[in-house]
Image (cartoon, rainbow, N blue to C red; front, top):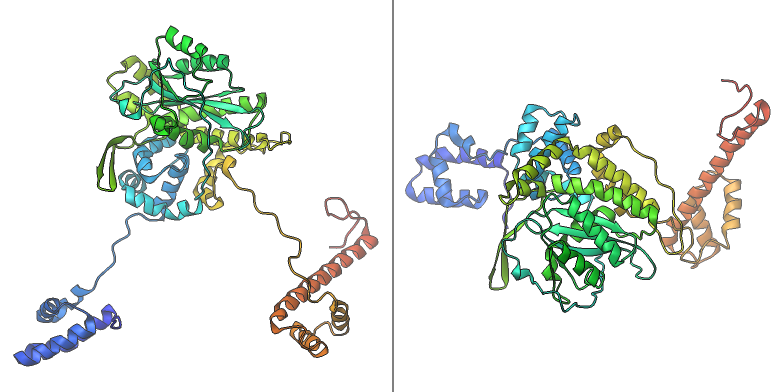
Length: 520
């Protein structure tokens, strides 16, 4: 492969060769072109064109870099908006950027320069992914999926597959349970009843202390009151807690169509299964929660997250799916929030839409996210490993401090307290036999005689006294051991000096200060 020639060198070569090329004969021009193509790597026709140009136009061949459009101010502002959007993907973030900027400016959380604001509103999805690449790489995490058992099939409930869902109006929902057992199926734990609307993606979640059918009917009553549109249908899996006479009687009494999925076919409930991970697990995590205190905290968290998710979290809906050989091509609608889909639906009354608009104008996404993070931190203290008791909730953080930390929050890793991993404990035990255990008293005596001696000289003495016992690779271990010893001796001298001051001037207080009159 020929050596790469810089652009400046190519320009100098062209200027030197041009006059000779223009005045040469036809046969000589061929040789000159061969040499030029071999040196610069140009195509032959391109070399002929630039040799025929004027001398002043040689610089037109120089490739100049593109002017940077999105500077650091745009990137940092985008990071703040991305954090407020709970770190959604670039395509979903593009759809919610105008809404978030408007809400944050209306509540006084954001003041953008007009140029920066215009760039944020016009930035493309690939550019968003490029500007957030560093922050996303820092915050990557993965969680293992949890397996959930299926229950008995109820023969009196009709089956509906994923292919049976057509253009259903808002109000037909899928429902499922999410168990907060921390991976341990034994013992009592809190379960979350999740329901999502197929037409708009509107999602509701309610915590239940136990999987009892009477609690399920009460939760369905609350669900009907929280949905912005009438509940028309429910689709369950084959869970016996959902497939029972009490639930069937309640649904039929309120004219709610009830269906179920096929056994061992998760794709029949693909919408609710996706929300279980993207909403519930993303918000709550995989910890174990049990008891009234944890249920009360989860209820407060769900009341905030339903507003944040349904009003400020865009999602994508599948438009079409076609198979081309072994490849499946999927087309999606433009990402939109459930709130926006409700406003666009012609099957929902204008009075409901006006109520939602009035509610949206009062919502502050930054305050919602701040309160969600506070409750997530409280949930961390309530997570129950087997055989443990409740911990203490962490200190609260002000809204101003939370807003100031958004530009740099990505450097700390996962922003959700429920998903942060514990730092590994420091290893204090040895994994190998200490090679200097028997000779260490001798080494200490040498150090006391000549404190300035180097570790390498001491190691050579040991090799002379004990031939073939200490290979050259153990020099680094001895150097580290002697450095730690000298640091310990230095600390001892410092503390000895402090003790002398204490004995002469006063006593050492518990906070590390000295009592008495200490000379300055």
